[in-house]
Length: 65
Image (cartoon, rainbow, N blue to C red; front, side, top):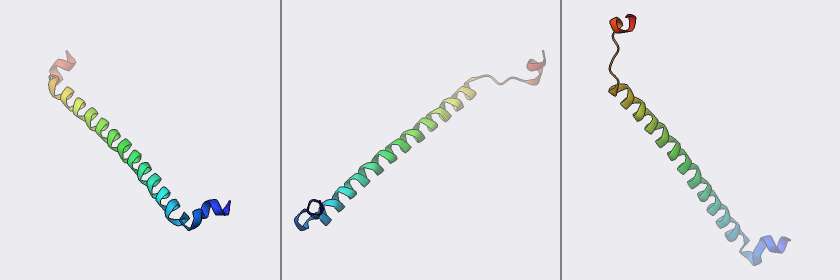
């Protein structure tokens, strides 16, 4: 088992490369999900702002009658 992890003296390079690869892939997935979440929130805010702008304002007189 020790021979497998040592990989004939290249284990340090192999395992560090593997660790770096999976770290970068994990970071890429995390950042993509965060960007998607932020884009969805911004889209919802824009829709809410457009809805409030397109609706006519209700005055006090109209609300009480």
